[in-house]
Image (spheres, helix red, strand yellow):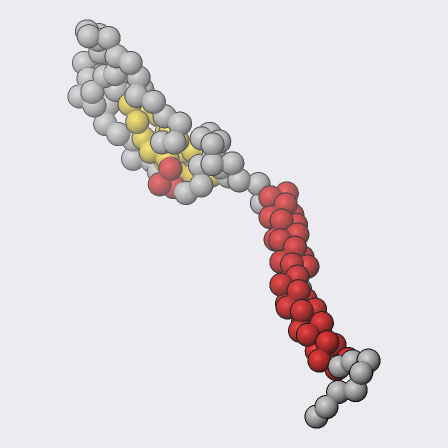
Length: 125
């Protein structure tokens, strides 16, 4: 095929331009979708945090019966006047006991009642 003077090939130029546009469109097209998914995800987390508040740093709240336990709070052993208390293990700290402790010579075994989590607080059942 011989081209005449001044004749152009518009079809080839248009094809190249269309290919370039398609590449750009392919790169940009997932962005709105990803932004929408991100915004929906953030919205779900915010709504869930309003209806289901959870603060892992809040140690005063118990979640299961395993968080609660009978503990001695006066440094005396079971064989000599221990004082028992149903405590939350997440917030309980061993008492700092002096070197010598005066304990009454009374056997005080661990209570037979259940120490359990009731409405977020450790309580005796």
